[in-house]
Amino acid sequence: MTIDRFDDESALSAALATYVLEQIVVRPSLVLGLPTGRTPLGLYRELRERSRGDRIDWSRVRTFNLDEFAGLPSAHPASYRAYMQAELFDHVSIDPANIGFLDGNAVDRTEECRRYEDAITAAGGIDLQILGIGANGHIGFNEPASGLRAHTHVAELERETREANADRFGGQWRNVPECALSMGMATILNATEIVLIATGAEKAEAVRGMVEGLITTRLPASLLQVHPRVTVMVDRDAWSS
Ligand code: GLP
Image 1 (cartoon, rainbow, N blue to C red):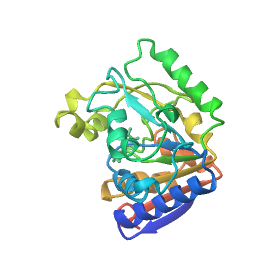
Image 2 (image 1 turned 180 degrees about the vertical axis):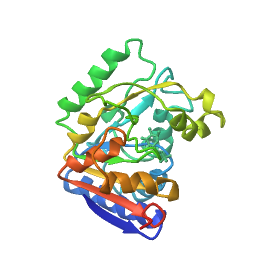
Image 3 (image 1 turned 90 degrees about the vertical axis):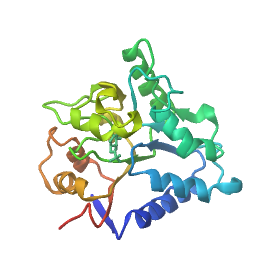
Image 4 (image 1 turned 120 degrees about the horizontal axis):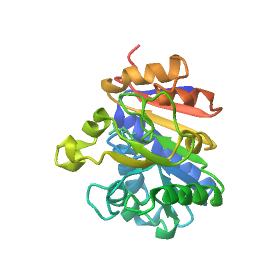
């Protein structure tokens, strides 16, 4: 793993935005894996501002988001799809047909997970996967457990994770769905390159475990140690050595 340290969240976001846009320029049909949450908000702000006025051609870029809440229609304001539309997709020249997203409202969730895996494979796999990390070390919605799922699956959410997502649901963690659809560990590890971003002191313990600890399903992000091309971008607070 390569560790890139930044003074603060805005320096980190600016550097990652530069890298993502460079990749799009070099490879216009880039396949991007994208996260949601608070951490990538600065990245999306930078991407939409620097893409303004069609400065960056997103028309051939394809995206796959990591996860989505189960039981929510994509138009629901608390859905990750709504987040992505508001933070990025509505502001850049991406072709809606090139946006890959799990349908949290699918009647047959198992079939929906299979469809998503097939769509990623059909796109040729993910070139650049960007990840956040939960304070408990989860990535996507792969929660700490005695065993992890390889492929896209229906995941039960830990109370801690529901609390961390409560701001999208009126501040009430009980309103956060109990389940989500999420890429699995193999879906993530199959990406050619992975960049994980972490900011804030509440992530420091998980980051330390991910980088220096044993590989364990109790800290799902630690599995990234087996990947040959991972960069961890942290601000000062998330790297407290
Ligand atoms: C959420 C998402 C993850 C995200 C993580 C951290 O539950 N499913 O993909 O990386 O939690 O979120 P935040 O950046 O808000 O701390």
